[in-house]
Length: 263
Image (cartoon, rainbow, N blue to C red):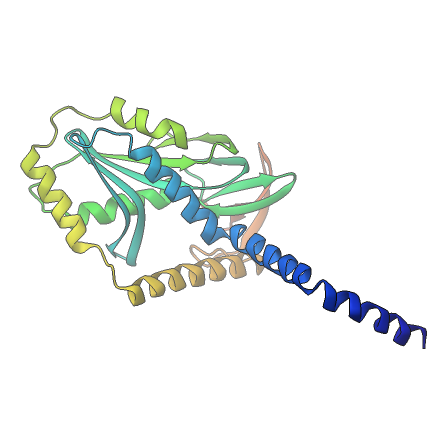
């Protein structure tokens, strides 16, 4: 009886302030959207586009969200900057927290107040992008490539890499202007490269959805294998080991397989 009377008392209040509950639901939905990895990724890419727009247009050509064929199917490249000094390939990571990793690590780690998550080494990821671009360009074009991994200033970087520049968003334009080989490409070659990349860019929405679906499937498969103690790279067993940064999982087929997963 008490419960019934309570419900009867609440219903009029709910009906009177129904608009308030709608606002609460909308706010919760918006929070869910903006906290999703896809939304954060797009927000980071938009920030880089804004930063790259400060580069002199007569010297630099910026291409964004390029999807081209690769050995494994397709590869999506966040940003490409073309100049007479070479090609800068940029992988964007809109992450917060402490980011740890090395150039040789299979995975890097994000640590937010003790909550640790693994993600694919972005240096390796960008190397795959560069290989796909090199395979795409004609053999007579010998152009220097520069790998850049861009992180949000909200992150604290604790990483080491020699073959790639790991930078914060605001540092990207300055790095591009200060690096490269002057006159490495003629204007004709530069326009040829731009036409080749834009011509190969896959814009079909269905193909792009398939690319994203495949990427999510691969990620889920990797996580499932690690949880089962199976190396996602070679199928060996994962063994707990101690390193200078604490415990980690390493492949039993080491040194042939150097896969690691931080704990």
